Image (cartoon, rainbow, N blue to C red; front, top):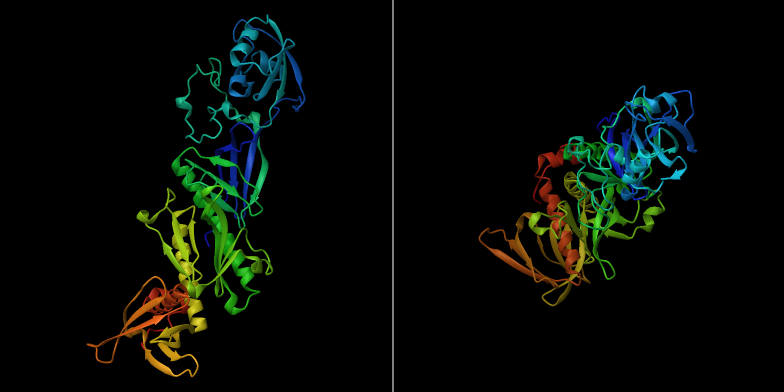
Amino acid sequence: MMALSTKVGIVLLIDGKSEPHEVRLKISKDLLTIQHQEVVCVTGSQCSAKERSVTLRRQEIGGFGLSIKGGAEYRVPVVISKIMKDQAADQTGMLFIGDAILRINGINVENATHEEVVQVLQTAGDEVTFTVRYLRKIPAFLKLPLIEEGQYSSIPSDQSSTASSPLFDSGLHLNNNSTNTRWCDSLAIPLLLARISLYTPGSDQLRPNAFEVIAMDGISSGVLQCYSIQECADWLRSISTAIGDLIQQHIRMTNKNLSLYEQIVHMGWVEERIQDAEFGQHYQSRFLALRGPNMFLFSGPPLSLCDWARGEKMYDLCETFLKTHKEVDLRDMRPCCFSVLTGTGDSHYFSTELAGDVALWEKAYQQAQFSEVQRVGSKTYSCVWRGHATGLTVDFNLGFACFEANSKQVFWRYKFCQLKGSSDDGKSKIKFLFQKNDPRLIETKELEFPNLVAALHCIHSFISAKVALVDPLFVESQCGGKMQIYCK
């Protein structure tokens, strides 16, 4: 487990509820906290969500001593963006950065454009009464240009701004005096069994430099957009590490209450590509788990032992086959994908958010399948050989044995190391090529199975487990290096 120190940074929140605005992210080992910036009074007066009326006298130099941004054309109010020190607005102690201007000398400007507010101020005379109300959430336009709804373009830098835009100070630059604001917690997302989403929901469209964190109960962070690719990668690494560490802790705790043969090897969120008559091809979140003899598929994490019995799908690990996909095998723009083929004929196409997750699932699957093959030792399938009702036993230690269904008389037996090749017709028949004691002689055995796929996957599982013993690193990880390959 990697120790995770607290990480803090600024991102843009796009939640669909309000205009995009800056928030501060803070991650600890088990919590992602989103903080909003609030205006803080720096004088003895009290800021509140109530309206305030403040009268200013225009000065010969500096005017009212404030700058404004925004306007109705941008779906935001006109807001005070700068207060010049020791000038008219500052001297009152009653106006603050982030105050929305509601009325000027009684004229309602709450829904006015930027230019309309400027015109009102120019003709208002030397003494002007501002009616304001401060905004708890500092709008994004105070520091950054707004991003149109549904658009996730890269956040431009301050250098790319132009003073001619109404979203910027009228001829002035923003005062970034941090003493006027503070960061307050607005949402805390538990990272245990949470998931990260990099894509527009249901699609293969990647959000540029942005992601979403969704808690186990479905609570979302909203879309969090970073300033750069590197910053986004750093946040993803920190959040995914925290989630991964918490999952491993949860697995260890759960396994204490499970028998040796029911242990959880791995579990976590994936996205399944689904063909739907109504929505067509789309992705849906699934919780995948490798536990004991089975692979489970859930709509959400199993939190109790009873939940494990309510899985949407359950498959025998010995009769499944996991395939990772290279670029030429991908079905759309998502690059990190793998498939699981099952003995029942089902096929599941999964996508992960991060490239390393595919390798993690592949390794966990190999470990789970290897353990299950060793546990069961052998599998038997009914079949037909030369017109006889027979059975084929695949045994981890003994290899292959074909026997008469009723009498159990063994017709033939071969070791794994004698299998030199095989092929199938895709329907019901498998043709085996076995080497006899004389290495120059090859014996062909053709069997017909009522469930070809299950038999094929099982044979592959047992052979893979046998081959895995040749890999010393795999052996070491499984059983401390105490096992060795042998041909019986």
